Image (cartoon, rainbow, N blue to C red; front, side, top):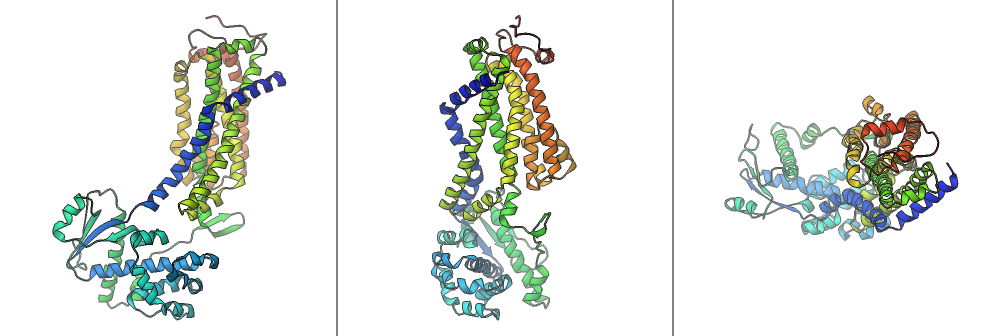
Length: 511
């Protein structure tokens, strides 16, 4: 093998690839697709209009109680928003919130919840001076909240109930027509005696697969019914709330330095490996196929024969593999830069700053480094296979039977990456990650934990040995197949080519 010849072939192939239009289409289109998968659901939720619904309340008291709970939940979110807004950014809040932001920031979380409840039902406000200051401004705050439209509420905080759901007045006789015509998403019927056992609560909709509205309203109905039952049993509102209060676990991330409460970025980082795996799959699949297609193209155009007259087949294969590998590194590097840049731009444009910040903060140099290592080794492994296939066949149609099992094998990690990401320390996940063709994908799926250093080192070493062996064997197939212009070889014949001893110069196979 002559390094100069290898370099010349690699340089030629690299320039030929990057000058093609499809290279730039791939460079721009792949990140756009991946970004769409990540951001489109959040954008749809951001821009979707409030769900309209109606309620028929035969009890006379339950719906007003539910409406008070809805308002209390919204006030709690608004107080939290005012509390966490930095002073410099408080001027961007609506005036009613900007005025109370400094006082809200001085209140503990439980005091803000108690104050939100007091703003709705007039119960005593917390004794804290900051709570008293907000209480004195309750008239302006209540007037502003009462005048909010769903669109205006969404501009403040998309998580507000009044931004997501809108209660409309509808006569009971017209409910069915309203649902059919799309005026409302559904309607609820509250029984005359909601406290009775097995009381007949009803939710009617034309789309029962969408349970968001039912679950949201049902949770508040249940809380109101439980509070009334507790009151009838002689329990105070505080006692009833304590009894019905769910246990809230503090999510803590365990590291070598100890355990600490996980931030939003750290929780988002647990699922970033899924994005890495998708990117890895697209990159390896796309770049490895480039080697096969270029080899087939050069065979059909008789370019391979011209090259063989000047340099050895081993130089051709090594150069083509190196050239395509450089194309792959260029593509992946461009994808990473574009994805991070587009996340920042679109996150700001569509007010998804918190979501995007959590993603960007979860990106670590450690994961990016191992991603590049596994990309290079994974590409070389699959390039060895696709390069040999490209040399053995004469056109893309003949290559399909060989590429089908290769593609299916690459799809396996996509099928199991979510279970692996959920339980990256499981024995089965660890064992499968030591299978070289699966190693790049499964090790990145496990990166959220992350795996112990010994797994990184051992799987990389095993994958490296496999790559060397695969390149050596595929090189033999490449040499025999490059001048094969007859019928494509059987799989058994390709194995025989790989086992043949390399003696003397390459001779064209007899067809």
